[in-house]
Every structure is written in structure tokens, then in C-alpha cells.
Image (tube, rainbow over all chains, first blue to last red; front, side):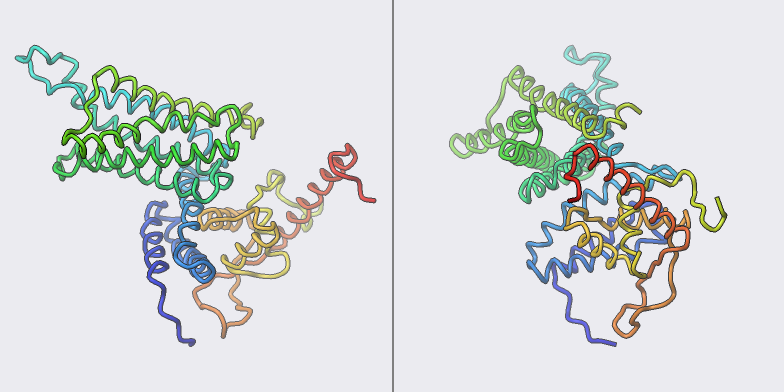
Length: 292
Length: 120
């Protein structure tokens, strides 16, 4: 038996993360293929590390993540059905549309006061709004993550390394935001939920913002190139101004209700339009799928 | 059509992943990572299959009888025992040939319509 070199830390960490992620595949598929899949990923990591060091793994991950998300859904959905790339892209487009709507409703619901029949500001509908808010936010963030994963699958390669990494950050941040909504519903770690939610929301849109710059530079979405930037710029800009305001005046920038509503509508309306653009691009690229 | 030369009716056209995997195995058995490298090399890096796509395709190809696992190791001394090798079955070879011929006919039409330059 040949003596193996000690594994590079970044390779070992990547392999461990990927091996843990494989748990999301169906049990039967996992039992048969988890080990060779982990081995194949390790081989790829080693090869990438040999040629480009730890930075090369950052380039490998976006492609792996897009493959992982698509095939995890495919294997769960299968039972004989194959999810084609165009089906995944169509689903992603719908996910962005529905996810944006769920987030707008969820954020509005989370802003409602606690239901209290003796409080003049509280209305009957708040009872349902309070109950639905975390659920809508969780579903909304999960769907937005799926939608951004669709953007990654459709445009990731053409967006360049920075664009790819930005979209991966956006997907991961959306998932963290969804997890923080679940934690909110369960009453776990209340102290860190607000900063965690705001940070993940900001990173989600910042990733999209960087992808938007790639779109403009590389003409990735003809007729829609400016859309990702327009959808993504508002929340990071607000956060940046807020932090500057905090540093200069000691107070985070407060927005009026109207400005907040316009900002959220611009952001999530933009995401919904992005979903529509993804659906249109999928129909153009796969006309037979659109006709089906 | 003779039973020995028949191929399943609904299998063509193949997905790009299935065709590329069959093509990678055309010149001998390979393990997953070698298949992936071969596909990348044959397509000038344009097709890069992740582990999920590769093993999802392998699962379906095994079920369709296009490929089978091999117990043999080309060079056991240099290889990891845990690696699984795959090779084409007779059906897989016929399906690969039929798909290559189908694509070739389409290329011929493309040349005829001057979408591609005709062979001089």
C-alpha cells in the first residue's frame, strides 16, 4: 500500500462538508452512491488544490453546489421521472416569482402588532398574520434561494468566477435567512436572530448585486441586463447608509414607512421580475419545453 | 429487428450526459472520476459533470442495462479497491452507435442546409 500525503486542510474540510451535504439525497440513492460521490468530489478537490491551491476550491464549489441542488431535487422527484435542466430552470423562475411574493407578505405580516383584542391598533387579522409570518418568511427565503440557484445554473458559467461566487453566497445567505426564520418560529437564539437575519438578507442581495454587475459587463440577460442590479441594490445601499449613519450619529438610519415599503417593493418586485426573465430565457433556450 | 441487435424503442435521443458517459466508456471500462475527466477532455471542458449528475446518470444507465459494474481492475496495484468500474453492455454499445448515427445524420442535414461548411 502506498503512503498517502497528509490531506490539505481545505481539501479535507471541503470533502467533509460535501459528505455531510449528501445526507439530503434520498436514502436509497445515498446508500448506493454517497461513497463514490464523496470520493469523486475528493479527487476533484485534490486536483484543483494541486493546480491552484485553496483558491481553486472556491471555483470548484459553485459548480458543485449547482449540481448538488439540481440533482438532489431530481433524485427526490424522480421515482422514474428525470428532471431536465430546463425543468429545473422553469421551477427556479417560478420559485423567484412566488418567493418574492411570499417575502413581501411575510415581512408585512411580521410587522403587524401582537394580536390583542384590547389593543386598538391590533386587528383580527393579526392573529393569522402573527402565525403565518415566520412560515411565509421561511418559504420565501427557501424559494428565493432555489431561484438564485436557477440563475447560477443558467448564467453561472458565463458570469465568470466572481459572478459565480456571488450567486453561491446569495444562495447560502438565503438559506441562512430561512434557517433564522425557523429559529424565530421556534424561539431559539432570539438574541442573535435580528443581526443574523439582516446580515443574511444583505449578503443575499449583495451577491445578486455583484451578479448584476457581471450581467451588465457580459450582456448575460439581453433586454434584462439591468434588472438584477436594480432589484439588488436597495437593501445593501440601505444597510451601508445605516452603518455610516450609526458611525457618524450613533443612530441607525431610520426609514419612514412609505420609503421602507417602496424599498421592499423595488427589491422583491425586482426579484419577481427576475423570475419572469428566467422563465422567458428558459422558454427561448428550450422552446419545446415551453410548448410542453 | 433481430433480438440481438435491437435497442429499446424509447431510449433515443439520449441526454447529453448519457451520451457522453457512453462515449467515455467506448474504449474501455473506467471509474467515475476517470469518466468525468474523459468527458471534460472530449468536450474541451465544455461539459463538466458534477458528482450528482454523473452518479444520477449512472444509476439510470445501470437500470436501463446500458452499462454494468465490472469486478476487474485494470491496474490493481495503482488503484483504490473501493473504486467502482463501469463498462458498456452489448445494449449500451448498440445504443451508442445508434445515437452517434442519429447525430451524424443531423450533422449531414446541417451541412446540406449550409448551417455548417460542407466537407471539402
